[in-house]
Every structure is written in C-alpha cells, then in structure tokens.
Length: 373
Image (cartoon, rainbow, N blue to C red; front, top):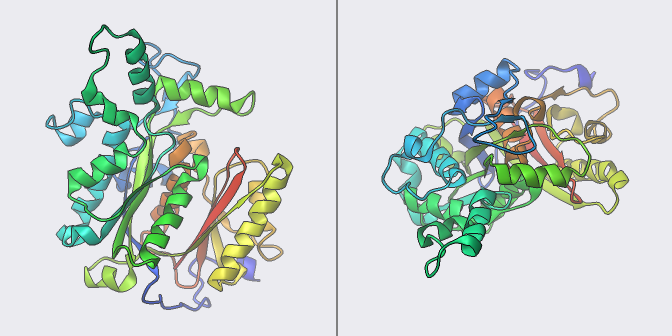
C-alpha cells in the first residue's frame, strides 16, 4: 500500500522544519536547454535529449556529439568589462550565481560576511590548465605566457571570482569529487551552516565542455560507456526555513542529510550505496516508505541498490538526467538535484514525502542526498 501512494497523498503527515534545518529556497541553472531554471524545467518536462552534433573545427576530439549551453559566452552573459581573460567555466559559474542573486533580491547579500559560497568542480578548467602549460613550453622568451590567464589555472578560480564579482565575503570553498561533486558540495554547505560559519549558503557545481576535457573523459572510460559530454552550472540558495519565510521565499525542499561511503571493488559499489541510503534515512529519522522520487546518476546496479533500502514493492518515480543532458561530470549530481527541485517547484515537495539523489562514482565512492517536503 505504501508503495502505491502518490506524491500528493494527504495521508502523509507534514513535519515542521527545525529552526536550524536548511531548505532550498531558490535555484538557477545554465544548462544545455538554455539559460535559467525555466529553460531547464521545460526541457526536462519535455524529456528532450540535449546532445547535438559538434562542430569538428571548433571542437576537434573523440566525440561527435555534445550538450553545450547554447550561445553562451563570457562577454555575452556578463558584459565585456572584466571578462577578456575569463574562461568558459568561470563565466558559467559567475553567471549562474548572478541569476540566482538577481531573482532572490538584495536581502541575500545584505550581510555579505555571513553569506558563504560553495562551488563544486572537476579539476577547474582543464582547457585553461592545459593551454597555460603548453604556452609555458612553446611560448617565445622572455615572457612565455600571458600572466593575466594564470588565475584560470587554479581550481578555486570559479568560486573566488564568483564571490568577488557579486560582493560575497563569507567562507569561500571549492569542492572536487568526480560525479558526486554536487552532493559533496551540499554536504559541505550544510556543515558550514551547522558550525555557525554563515547564515546562508550559495551552493552549486559547474562543468565546461572543451576538447581537452573530452580527451580526458574518453581515456578515463577505458573502453566502458562513453555517453556524449554535457556542460552547465547549477546553484541553490540554502538557508533556514525561518529566514526564507521572512524574505518572502517559499521553501522548495528541506535538506535532510547527505551520506557518502567508499568501496574497494566495483562489485561492492551497489551494496555500499544501499548502506548509504539506509544510513541517511535512519539518521534523519525518516520512514523509507516516504521516498517517492529518486534521481539516480545511472551507474550499473544503482537503481536496484536504492530499491533494496526501501520497503518491498516500493516503486518511486525516477528522474534520469544523464540520458538527456549527457555526462556533465562534476555537475551531474547537481543537475539531478535541480531536477528534483524543478519537479517540486510548484509548492515544493508535498509534506511528508522525500526524494533521493544518488550516485556511484567510478573512482570508488558512492553518495546520496535526502530532500524532504
């Protein structure tokens, strides 16, 4: 019976959010569907596949298709001032945070020293790192490289530039963790707030498409599945429910917890994820029967691993982003989280229901996030 209940089942009782519990009160996205969360929500609802043929002249490499943010440039999104040497990944992050802040209003940055920024990335900009390294070897002496482009080569360039651009003076953190980066960033953001280091957190993840990244991903697959690559940036505003309500923002979902676990053999990954899901439900004091949405990354055995942690016969709705957006690498689980928020945006998740965002990374880690109405 519990597995057959609908998302809006009135029999599921609401649980008021504790004073310190974080909620998702706003979000924004730059995705292969276009700029803004409305474009992402529309593309997702239409179940539209985003990968398209790549221009081999502009993007030579092993992939013939890719899912890029359409018509995006740093100057086009942010203006010419200050963007001459800004790489694509930094521009994606700065633009996404800018959209979010514009929609939320000035109260978010009223006390900039109490506003934290957490950004997930894969390696930083692979293109910037490789281009700068090549120039250092092939450039003419005595200058060899353009020093103005050096900041693009450090991993925390995107988070630092986003904070500077938007006047954010609180804790500034870069998180890197493969496909699980978005979930790891969420977990870190929650710890920042729980430790009293900030009042609100701007949190998200970004990834860019480049020929250099394409070759790295191609070889990392090592003969395995090689879906088209995607890119984009997703950011959220996390704050206490009381703070959101006072500012006139309707909480979309509560962040009930994140959990991570390691595995040392590929065949042990599914069991590790099942343990992870059970742990996050137990720690949050949530009945597994309340899980009505699951947004999996798409690894082999992942969905079955989640079902093993739920009651027998449970059949939650699945939201699968990877077949639609391609492999967005560091932004993958961030897009999965955005998909849950996009589906739930009309009034948020129904009271008493929960959603799981899950992932199995090829490098030996699994993770999940639990969101509640």
